[in-house]
Amino acid sequence: MTERDVQDALGHHLFLKNICIPNVLMRDSGKPPYEADFIYFNLNTLHLTEVEIKTDINDFRNDFKKARYHDNHNVMYLYYAIPRDLYDDHYETIDELLGDAGLILIDEIDTFDFRGNIYEFGGFVKRAKRIKGSVKLNETEKEYYMRIGCMKWVNR
Image (cartoon, rainbow, N blue to C red):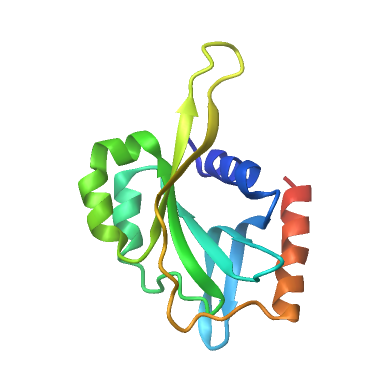
């Protein structure tokens, strides 16, 4: 399972009610930018959710050692999306490190034919807590993310 497989599974599950964007450079005044693997927001609430995608346990552990930890002022909720088998194999470590972040599982379905495996949203294991100090998107920020979203999906 790759990061793109997870992005596609998230996008297919969330797109009917949300604006979903893969690989977004998150900018904040006075801070260096960082890349979010996947973000989404609802046009009614304008609450931005960031999803960090991890496909192996070492990458998951290393995420908590970053100098800048998913701290954009608009990120209200942070989730990790991981393959179900990764969680099954390392649930104690993952649960211990999550903190206030939420957890989404992605299921891999073996099709046993030429199409390869299918990846789909497996559900929320843990809901994220709202990040203190985060703010809703304003109109300019909403348009910025929507413009990036159009470019990202069209150019894939």
